[in-house]
Length: 140
Image (tube, rainbow, N blue to C red):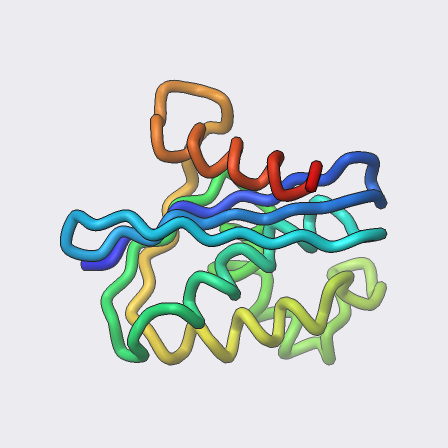
């Protein structure tokens, strides 16, 4: 089982953003990160699992840990109705970040994923580490 810890960060919202991921395969940690100007925190939270999934073999069994309820609820619950409703929210508004959601959805179908929400800034060491990676990326 591959474990992936993801996080996004933004200085200002919108502002300078960063994302980070820690990919753990057979006990070995691989850290990845990236940044973008004029973005939002939610976009960075979505980009982290997208970039991480692109680094692992298709068909893998994966646990993805995120402290973003937006990402976890979006990909495991909300997306089904969004697709049924032509990418509109329950308020009939266009879904924000549709391009990222569709990319994450397509990628997700290539893996066996268990999405796990973890509390931010608490006792989870790897979540705290990936938070730091994302913040450093946003600052660079």
